[in-house]
Length: 52
Image (cartoon, rainbow, N blue to C red):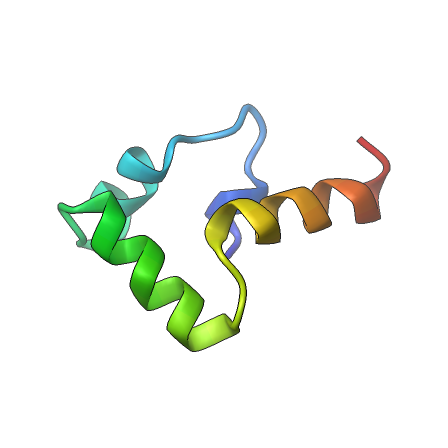
């Protein structure tokens, strides 16, 4: 979650590689099942909260 708020933004592939997931699509599915939101929705919400 911290990496999704990283500036400059990292791609989902870069984040996946950093946390041990080679497939960004699988990472996205796992993230959504754990948080109830997609990585992009989470990133957009985080950006809105900090006023970007």
